[in-house]
Image 1 (cartoon, rainbow, N blue to C red):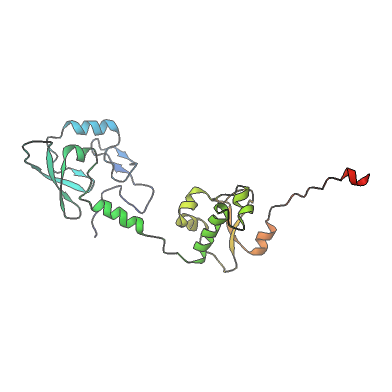
Image 2 (image 1 turned 30 degrees about the horizontal axis):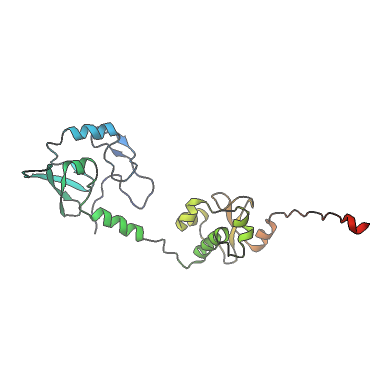
Length: 219
């Protein structure tokens, strides 16, 4: 299904685009994709006049005509951008509770199912191993990572794509991810691709403590 999306809707991007307020026309950056008004006052003022919503657009819906209802709230027939019709009351439209015929929800579900397409690659395996070292207490390397407070930053923990976009593809098969500062976790600015030799030279210095002398043994 392909159709024109309203301004500000782009599920593949986290940062939403600026758009005009549906009431005052002021340009603002919405907190979520199909937010119509820049403030609560604009939303309240828009609610005052619900006598004629024909031609107005609410999310994916454009109001076509008013339906004749003997009782109950005023109901409108709307045309969705996908071509289907839907009905909605004035309050559901102006309060942004009805924004499509249902195709918007399905589009978001489909978007959430789209993966990075790199499962099984060396970079993806390195990312999973990185998390295991920091979180899985049964992992052999946990004592040197998670056991001493090394963590993966929340953005990379939740998204392999964010990790990959920062560090990039592995330049050579003999390289692995390395922390530049061993006292900090896996976070932007503190990781690089490095050889085993480079990682060995970058290991933290162990502090050896001299054993106290046994006083009783010398007597």
